[in-house]
Amino acid sequence: MMKQILFAGVIGLFLTLVGTPLLIKLLARKGYGQYIRDDGPREHASKRGTPTMGGIAFILATVAAYFLSKAITGYTPTYSGLLVLGLMVGMGMVGFLDDYIKIVKRRSLGLRAKAKMAGQLIVGIAFAVLSLQFADARGQTPASTKLSFITDFGWTIGPVLFVVWALFMILAMSNGVNLTDGLDGLATGASVLVFGAYTFIGVWQFQESCANGETLTNPGACYEVRDPLDLAVVASALMGSCLGFLWWNTSPAKIFMGDTGSLALGGVLAGLAICSRTELLLAILGGLFVLITMSVVIQVGSFKLTGKRVFRMAPLQHHFELKGWSEVLVVVRFWIIQGICVIVGLGLFYAGWAADK
Image 1 (cartoon, rainbow, N blue to C red):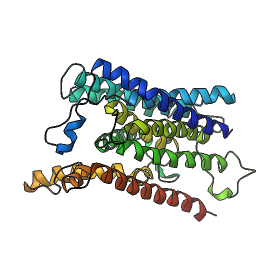
Image 2: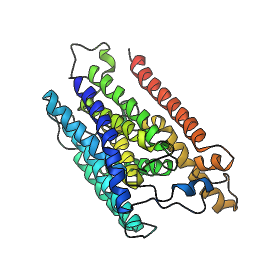
Image 3: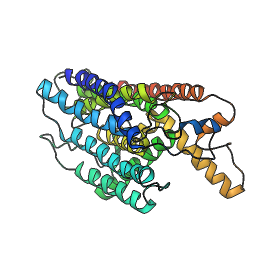
């Protein structure tokens, strides 16, 4: 069963390593280049015209890797895996429309704010509603109406509040990845680390699933997750696909992921957290995205309240660029911060299991 995870990661890596340069040539031939803000760091001016919408590469590679791994190993897809992939594709389509209008139609703002929000709401609501369906033989659905940290806890919030909560998570993570995607390879590399964490979490939850009552090493701390192994397959496919894309996206980037990629990655991160019952843990595992989002909130809030800016420029990565850090230095140090967040998050995840022994 574990072979699925290996096959998904390797296939995803291969497809983006080989497929991304083909996409680069196609986008360059059509002239689909990136728009660069004039008020950003001056070094970014050289990036104007770099092909964007690169998220297409790892979205298609992830979907292909998932289904090919199933075909090779003979296992069938699960509802949890399909729902998380559907959320990624749906959010990616909203981002693609935004990129397409921005670049092809030469309208710098892309989709109108209301249209973009409507698209995200439709995709998010569809995922949230469907994730409470499809109960298995043990009555487990892909998502739960309880809040979760390393497992479900507390009271049931009900389906309506769950949909609102799921939408908040999806929109918050999509916005976080989108804000992080400002330097070559930054968001892609950070995402690889989080997907690696979710691959581990899925495998661990599968081994310690309450469904495996006779083989549990710690019966008092089993996991009630519907399809943990398949979530690990999805996470592995994403990790491999993003790693292959990073080869072309790292400095100097030959292609950018665009909103197509950032909205898809944010959506799928939220989907993995919801279906693996680690919703609040995502704030730690994806700590870099949270930190960068908060820098924008602080900057805007400070300026509106006091008329003064806390940072030279927001999001946070551009503040350090304007302080004189090179782009590569910012990216590598932010990857280190993201790595620390993943280590802390996985440590808390394991500690929660060990504490219930």
